Amino acid sequence: MIQIYRLTMRFPNGIEALRDVSFRVHEGEVAFIAGRSGSGKSTLLSLVTAELKPSDGQILVAGRNLAVLKADQRPILRRAIGRIWQEPRLLPDRSVRDNIAVPLEILGVTGERARQRVDQMLELVGMERHHAALPAWLSSLEQQRVALARAIVHEPSLVIADEPGGNLDPEGAMSIMQMLVDLKSRGITVAIAVRDRAIADKFSQRVVVLNKGFLIEDDGAEARPPSEA
Ligand code: ADP
Ligand code: MG
Image (cartoon, rainbow, N blue to C red):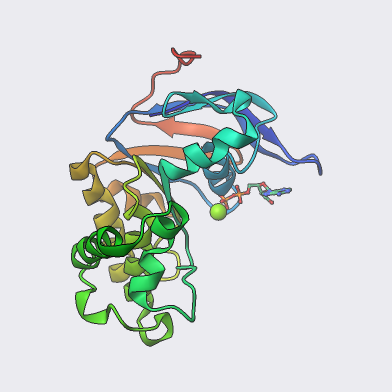
C-alpha cells in the first residue's frame, strides 16, 4: 500500500526532515510512526498524501508513483485517503452530521445514499445521539470521534492519522487509537504518528521509529526498491 525507498526531504531552509528513509506498509496493515517532536513524522505523512514532494527517493501509494503524479491525478489519490490530525478540524457552524458528510459532498454524493452512509458512521463512532450537535458542545474525545467518522465516510483504503491523541487525556488518546487500529478489520491500511513509542507498543502492531529524520527502528523491516516503480 505504501512503499518508501531512500526518501529524503530537504526544505528550502536547509533542514533535512527525512534522511534516506525506506520502509513499506502492506495493505490492511496498521503502522505506528513513532518519534519525538521534530523527528519528521508529519513531513513523512504529508509526503504520503502528496501534499509535499520529496527531494529524493521514491514513494508509491496504492500503486501510484508520487514522483510522477500529475496535478490532475492528485484528487484521485486524496479520495483513497482519509486524514485525521491532532485537532479535530471540524467546521464550527455545522452539525456533527453535516461535518461527517463533507467528504461525500465533495464527491457529489448527496440525498438518501449520503444520509445512510453518515448514519453508519455515526453508529460506528458511537455518536448517534449527538448527530445534531455543534462541535463546540462536544468533549475533545467526542470531536475526535466525529473527525474519525469524517475520515472514513468516503471509504478510503488508507487512513493517515497525525498524533490523533495529541490533545486528549491518556484514556481518550488510547480510545481513539484503538478505533483507528480496529479499522484494520475493514481492510483499511492505517498509519498513525505518535510522539511516545510506549503508546505504540501497547497495540502490538507494526512500529517504525524516526529520530532526527532517520529511521532508526522498524520491526517489519525489508528494504528494497519498490516493485511497481
Ligand atoms: P514531527 O511531526 O515529528 O514533529 P516534522 O515533520 O513536523 O516533525 O518536522 C521535522 C523537521 O522539519 C523539523 O525540524 C521542522 O522544523 C522541519 N520542518 C517541517 N516543516 C517544514 C517546512 N515547511 N519548512 C522548513 N522546515 C520544516
Ligand atoms: Mg508532527
